Picture 1 (tube, rainbow, N blue to C red):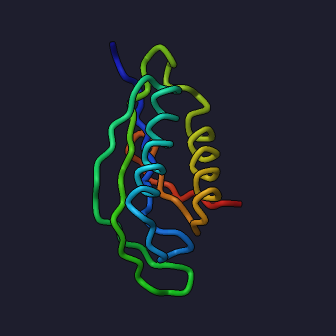
Picture 2 (cartoon, rainbow, N blue to C red; picture 1 turned 45 degrees about the vertical axis):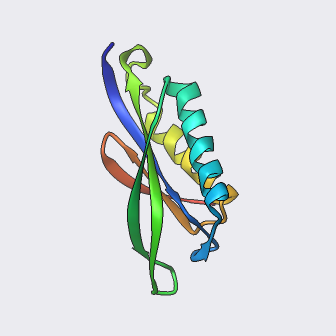
Length: 116
């Protein structure tokens, strides 16, 4: 099988910018993205990382994150709508998680999604 594209969503461990979530809530978030990617693309991988960004108020937010990624199979022919699909998907997770923004990637190019 050949994969023609890759996607990811960085799952935050906070709510409302810097409020810590319980480990169970973080696991639930990661699982929801992984299940979504698995249903759409056939699988997913989750990797823990440390994330940092500057919030709207100018403060530096440091948090544990999990990067959930998936390869998109050639049978989807790269999904011409992949960028829009990922923007909408990440925006929906962003809103559900009460985040200012969520980082997502399409073919290793990073984008920020807002809850809009």
